[in-house]
Length: 156
Image 1 (tube, one colour):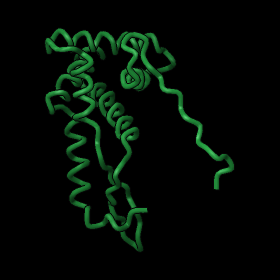
Image 2 (tube, rainbow, N blue to C red):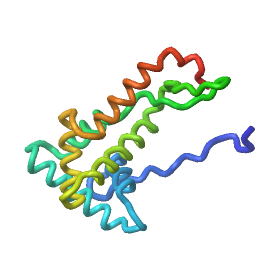
Image 3 (cartoon, rainbow, N blue to C red):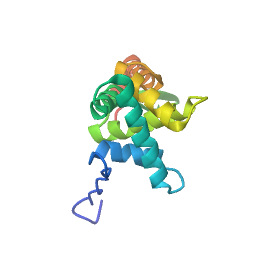
Image 4 (tube, helix red, strand yellow):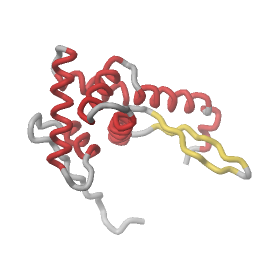
C-alpha cells in the first residue's frame, strides 16, 4: 500500500515552436545522449518536409499519423498452470500515445539510405495515410488481441 495519498503528476513537456505536448514527447523520443537541440532540429525539419510534401498543415498531418498509430489494446503474457497465454488488455490513452511515439521513432530509424529527418517525415506521411511500419504494428497488435480474446478472463 502506498504511503502517499496522491500520485505526483508528471510535468507535461511542450515544444517551444508549436507549444504542443505530443510534439514535445516525440522530440524526447528522438532524443539521444542529451542532445535536445539536435532532436528538435530533426523533428522541426521533418515537420517542414511533411508540410511541403502534403500541402497541408504539418500539425494536422502529424496528429492524424499519431491517431492512426495509437493502439487501444495490447497483449500481455500470463502464465496459468503450465501454459502461457497472450492476454489482451485495454490500455489508457496516455499509454497508447507513448507506445505510438515509440513505434513512430523506431520504424523511422529502421529505414535506410536517408537522413533521420527524411526518414521521420516519410514515416509520418505514410502513417497519416494508414500505411507504414508503425500502422502495421498497430494492426498486428490488434489482430493478436482479437485472436486471443478467449483468454481475456485471465486479466489481472
